[in-house]
Image 1 (spheres, each protein chain N blue to C red):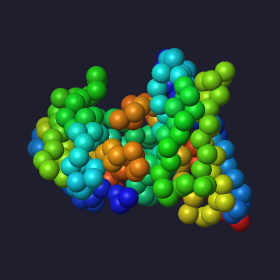
Image 2: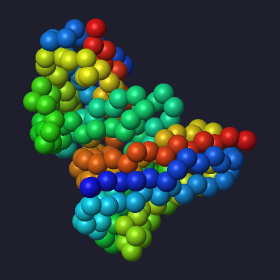
Image 3: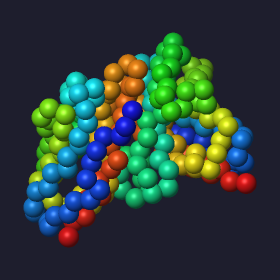
Image 4: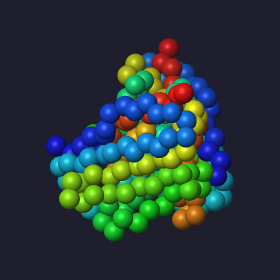
Amino acid sequence: QSALTQPASVSGSPGQSITISCTGTSSDVGSYNLVSWYQQHPGKAPKLMIYEVSKRPSGVSNRFSGSKSGNTASLTISGLQAEDEADYYCCSYAGSSTSWVFGGGTKLTVL
Amino acid sequence: QVQLVQSGAEVKKPGASVKVSCKASGYTFTSYYMHWVRQAPGQGLEWMGIINPSGGSTSYAQKFQGRVTMTRDTSTSTVYMELSSLRSEDTAVYYCARGWWELILWGQGTLVTVSS
């Protein structure tokens, strides 16, 4: 099972909005509304930011939102803040034989 | 509080095995599945497999089939991940993470270094 495809890097200025894409196939992202997004700061464990495509866990800022169209999921961060600078990973359920697959990760730089 | 605490860093020689533990506390251990995910230095996250702490059933990523074994001890609320026939490419931080469709709660990670 190949990893989901994410851009290697994105950047934005404080206050701006950015979107990170996550492209899979009809066997994973396209088949299930089970895409999640994780934020990882250097040297730290990942943190769940979005689950089931667009749901936010308690405590996660509403500046973070998720969506999906066909085989591509997206994470949008609005009102960029310095603390948003981190690596972001998408993850999708891919069926019982393959189970779960991650994206390659996107490094967000806040200029 | 609800947390997952993993065992400490390991250094292993090529061909050896490593067993990493993940002790759960603050919740009912058997009520939530546990995933294992690894991250090689400077690389992305890689899903390895999942275990049901209640019955012990497992599902492994095809890449690790035959080399990985996930087990649990309900008496100590601990899950284990054993990886055998280690090679240099297995050098990574290994994480346990609670959840099913999404990985909600993560351990702090365990660095496994494979070096001769």
